[in-house]
Image (cartoon, rainbow over all chains, first blue to last red; front, side, top):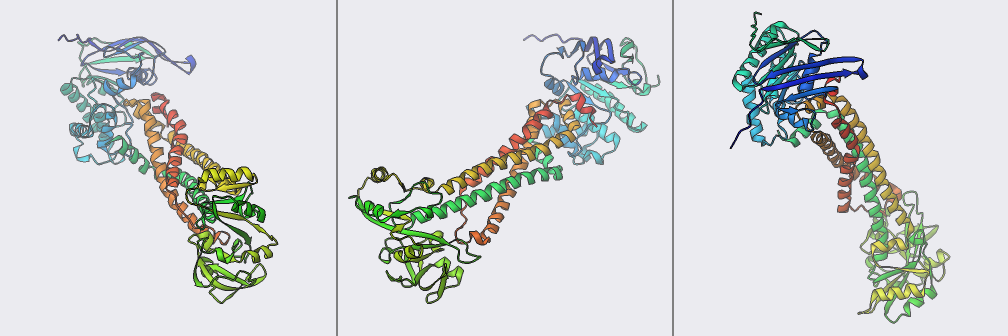
Length: 237
Length: 372
């Protein structure tokens, strides 16, 4: 049985334009970029530079005005983006976006509906992920009773629920103190190492971006500097 | 966690919103149940007069607004007796009078004393009245208990003083809450000489009853024969109108309840916009989101239906205490009313929650996530 050769690119954006308010706001202005499989890329830029918009388009949460986005070999203009979001990408938001009335275990289970797993398997998977992010002792706790760092770790566990090949994180440490932020970044590094996932992380903090293999800089809806993957920046950067 | 468990969790977490929706449904269901039981019970009570005795069918004037307004003269009764298949015909005059403020609808039944046994009347105390007595009356056992009368007492009915000579039972609320007098006496009091309200017909063994009924109705177009409950509307348009009003009220309750469900579900969907954005972001399909909102509405509606059934039961108990219906209303709870309540509750959920659910499903994930 032959096996298809995987595309080397996890994420490809080709001349992507995104305008809002009937063209008054040009959030992305012809962005072309590639993220390799297993790569950890940080997207940096000032507020309004378009980095979050790019992340949302890659997550299929929105559609580009023009241009092409290919993720895991799939052109996102084709139908069925719910399944793509459920199985291919895991999303981590700055504000966590957890369901406050569900406990941590249930929050992790929410994305697993419709993935074909039985309830028992879902629960086992959720427990495994809570253990991976250090929240095993709080599986019955609801998000309002967790610290900011714990909530973000829970959000990461939820993002990993369906074995995604890509993690997309939008300012994941933006609302955390430095200790919590460091713990989250360590978690990202560990996840990337243990699960061989591609990570695209949006941040305006160079200290955070420094944990990535590569940093992309954006300004006014364009990528202004895209160092090759061989250039490795360190946290001390 | 199963999908059903998530639905239940969402419902019980938002207690106020769920309660408000449930109350709207409960009020609708209470209306349906109370009116349904009331109409059904009144129909049973009214039909029981036609079923009193051991007649094979009853003959009344066709198309009167109320069965007590039916009038058959001696000639019509004699014509019924002339059919060779007919074994016996008992003509009964029914009159409704106001006894007092607590008994505004008191029935007098005029029957010849020699026909009491054939009519199914059992004298349980005292004796039957004399055929030509003008001051004797028998009370049904329910009426006697309600009026605190016994054999030997006097009772004034419509300004006429009468001796209570006996207490009887016919085995139904309608008859047992009434009084009986000699037919000729009641005809005199009502100034309806030679007139009866209903004729109870008993046929000879082996008679083709449908064919006989058809012959009677063909020979006497002004008369209608009644054998089953469903035929009662042929001689009593009031009950047909009440039944129609009951159906209309059920539809109205469904619409009002659905609007209540829609209102609170729309507000809920608006408040939960961000939550729905999260669910879409983690890969939930539109269909699953519709299922979530609809499932919550169905669960709330079923809970509301349970409360509404209880409220309907209490409403019926209260209605029984109203003097105007005492004596003519004995509640009967048909199983169909529960099915109808359940159907209407689910209908309320589907009609009321469909639009909000579709609105939730059509939210664009990014716009929903930006919602404050």
